[in-house]
Length: 97
Image (tube, rainbow, N blue to C red; front, side, top):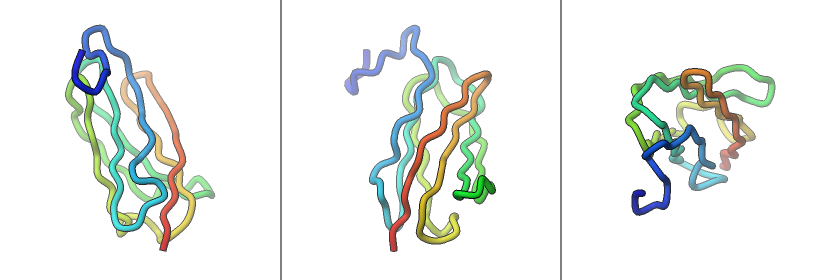
């Protein structure tokens, strides 16, 4: 077990709430993978339109991705979705002015 209390032996996929939330400037999204694998992070506006997408190779255990508000379409509510293998999870985030 690592110091954050997340087991990486026999671990599972997880997507955490972005921090800070709401945010101005940038925010960090953390996620956990049971094995190193490709991860696609998509951010959608409230209409479901993808406004940002990034695919990376994540490492086994905890990973982070920083999102700059300039990559989005201004203040408002957004949904971010992580896809890796058969795993998909979606959470909400808020950008403030």
